[in-house]
Image (cartoon, rainbow, N blue to C red; front, side, top):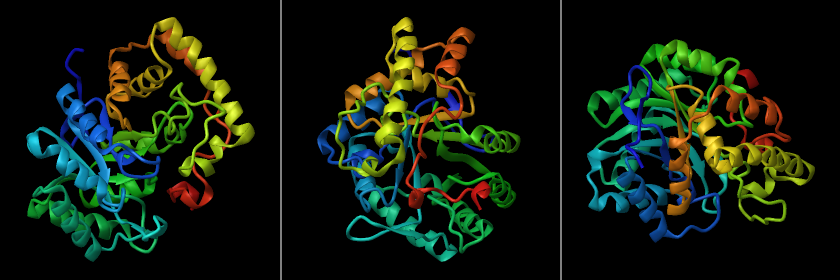
Length: 332
């Protein structure tokens, strides 16, 4: 494989590999993971030229940060950029207890993250969700203070709308917005993406394979005991409809000699140089498949065929159950 191209996290952020590695599934939410294979996958990603590792301090209640720490022990810390989400509150049973983005909480969460990662700085630090009790200006102001101290290099946001982007960016430059974006999840295109581009803010897109739904590997008979078991898009008639969309993509992928997953990732890559897809590979074979998307060139005819097969709004069911939905400006 040729060298991985780079993209910038906005006008204020660093250069990163055109694909980032989302590490959440190595610790949480997608069922058991093999720790040795997870570390091998992180190593393989770095060796291939992937330099953006995405995590959250609540993934496995700190386990994911400790895993990254272990993986980086025989790698150069400065060869990677670590993006961390904070503020999501968990309990001992793995439940969710809201979000805390108070200024005094920022430094507390960050202190624990730095210790678990075994580093003196986080490259991009962001609240995982908007805290409805705290003005975004206060949260960003507190992170900006950590930037001044050298503990944080850049500030990001996650799952917020246009109004919040503008208010936050007025306090301190925002490098990137992390938000779900995929062929069947295109809600950001109307307002959020244009606002980010106006402000010079990149998008790190997660869920590019819609939690495996449009990977080409999911089947209607597959059973799951993770959070997808209650995800509307994986239920009953919704699942049947959504998998029919995947079959339409499969024909296009076959004509190009690529996998469905590669086609779906390449589509996100084609949306602009300011968009960096995060792939949640937990195994080296899935990572290799995802990296192959970098070698896929989509022509105008390809894009038209994909649009015809999966037009905007084609998916059945919401991307999350109601209680898991982010509170975007447009939803208030």
